[in-house]
Image (cartoon, rainbow, N blue to C red; front, side, top):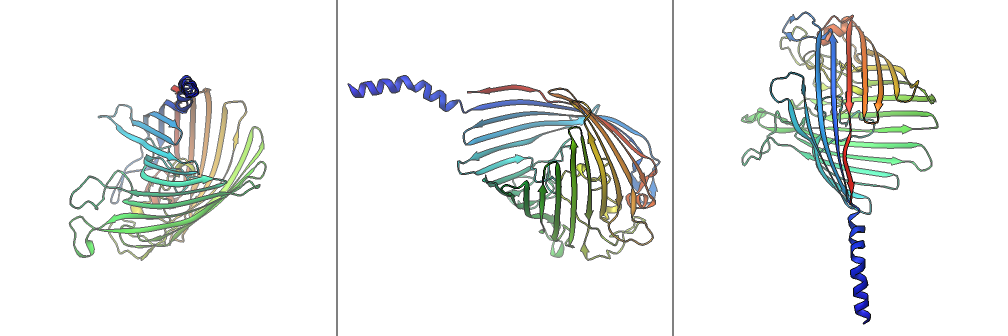
Amino acid sequence: MRNIALLTSLLLALPSIIVAQESDNQLDINLQMLEHGEMRIGGISPTNGEETYAPKNAYFLMSRTRLNIDYKRSGLETKVTAQHSGVWGQKGQGNFNIHEAWARLNMKNGMFAQIGRQALSYDDERIIGPNDWAMAALSHDVLKLGYEGHGHKAHVILGFNQNAENIYGGTYYMDGAKPYKSMLMGWYHFDVPKLPLGVSAIAMNIGMQAGDKEGIGSNAPRTENQQLVGGYVSFHPKRWTIEASYYHQLGKDEHGLKIDAWMASVAANAQLNSWLNVAAGYDYLSGDEYFALTPSGQFGIVRHQTIKGFNPIYGSHHKFYGMMDFFYVSTYLFGFTPGLQNLYAGGDFTPIKGLKLKARYHYLSIATNLRDVNKTLGHDVDLEVSYQLMKDVRLSAGFSYMTGTETMEKLKRANNTGHLNWGWFSLIFSPKIFSTKW
């Protein structure tokens, strides 16, 4: 009788046990629609040898739509983001892809494994970031293993890209969807106990395809590896935020030239009160002293045997070097990299709830000494306003003005450098369509 009574009570409790187990499940479906317009006056023109074209104003509208599906339960999390981007009136279907598609296994001891296509964001996003300002943005096909707990975060990321599931020649990767052939990265972050201090260290190896697929001898297919090591520090005493970073690049580029480049940055922000924040900072990115190609556009002698121009690789560049994206988004003439010095100051002003005004001034110059050119590239002023129309609708707009120098015109082959203007607006809808737990 006792066993029958126990069995009966278990059967009666079974529905509540099942519900308790399954209440761990959560499903969220979100939509993001971004409508974006730009006006460009002056700037970098197309080139054909010595010939340059007269500057013409440019106007266009773009859009990006993302559908996010997130599922979570104890020990498991998955995400799929379908994305379409394009220009209004563009012929064809624009750019449709799966921006993210990953699964993550979480263990109780803080260990996890995440595999699939995923947007990566580390520290201030200077080296690795989603670059979300770009319509297509940036994601990586990788395996991420890690531990997070007790103030420590440690991640190891492995990526290996191919164009097709080849039976023969399956290690050659050129002109693929991702910017590298292989990547091995380690990242460690520590939040110091009882101090508003965070310290990060990063080390990575990037494998780039070199040589020709059918080449022989020195032109045979091979992989050239470049390395990056460095660190990032963030300190938050009361109303201050102080950040600093240093990174060094070594190894070889895809042409086999040695790399020895570095960068350093420091930034400070002060929250003076609830409505005003001021900021200032300085970035230094090393550069090359000689042209790999002559300024006239004809092939010349490569005078440097070591590349000293730092490449911030897969970071969110739009955040750092002026909103007009003249640097590390567009290249210098024939890929020449004389480096960059970026001294900036500005502030954020929030006069009323939901409204934010932002202003930045940038003094921009090259990092190396070049014959017959001044170091100064120009002065850039960026203005931005954003307003939260409702909880899931935000309107932003901005205007940038840059006065370029003769150095800017020579190195960037830019027209009308004295009056470079850029205006833009963005309207973002991000409604939560569906959310449930069971």
